[in-house]
Length: 470
Picture 1 (tube, rainbow, N blue to C red):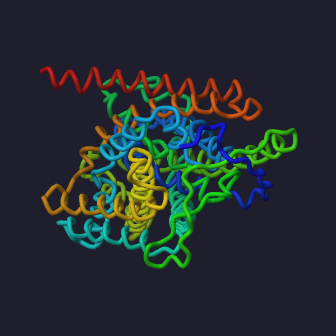
Picture 2: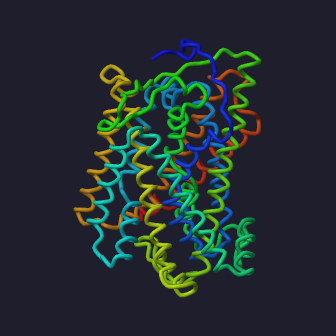
Picture 3: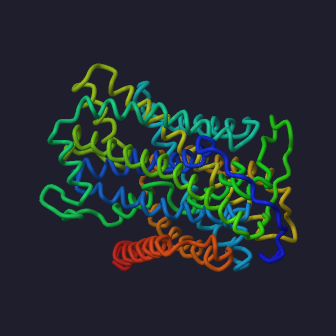
């Protein structure tokens, strides 16, 4: 593998208009919609009220800065951060293989989607619905001619349908008192507590924080999406096309390029940077914040302290019943169908991101056996391996893998601690001084690094280890 200094020098392309930037942030937003936005934060709100919602906005804000630093590297080098990491430490691909596969191997999100759909159609045993959903995900990702466009278009459609629907339902149901509780919760004031209520599980709170956005190593897939969108130096990298319907087998480049640093190229990079920040702020942070607050508000208004479990998502079903009574028949059913589609889209995007990460890191971990041209077949091999594991899980009778969401999220929080520090180190030591992170961005990344590191270690020590030594 070339050193950073040996990368070929190519011209930095001109930045297009802002409207051309829409895309990658919808995918990263979609990665969080099905776990944090629909399940974990609404569940916490149904149990403790809106006083915890500040944590959701904090999580989205931290991930905004993390995602942008991941984007910075991809814009400047036209390659994923995993390639940059491998140049730094040869063994890091092994870490990313394990820390991506273990937390995401259980198809808990699609199990939730199947459970909701099964309730709508009156089917109690939903394992075969979940299996059908898994196969459908595999076919959608395999048959789309250009993989990136398939995922982007799906997530755009889900956001365009889902967010306005949730907004309308919330407007119709919310009272001034409800909106006041939401506003108070944004600054950490709950009903009888500040920041954290007595009795709240720190593990569950950390899980929700990790899933306020993509979570875990999935944030790093942002560099893949930036590259495949052709942003910045990613213009020179190829895209993954379907093994079945892809008309042209584009050559996927593993290693990127660099541009000569001049006043003109630096100004052009900063234009890229401003526009991609604007797009990510509007789509990921703003739409994400509105969605997570409204979904939590719906849970608070309809099922606050009425019971319901996150393990079998009964609180969502109870919420739909309350919406039916408060508005009109079938309004709750419509809510469940929107949630079903959103969860389905999230599982699809999770499998896409994980397959990209695992495929590329397999090549990086075995450079003497695998080449960049193998990324395309490896992607589909990994994808269908995830699906096969999911099918075996459901056939084995384990139909509620959402019980593992909290454990998986704790692992993902620790993974975020690791990759946040690595990304900052990579950008600070390998990019030209003129385009390195500013002091503000550095402070934000260090804050995220310390936050996820200290919180995850504390939770692991006080929760997981205490149980082990009992």
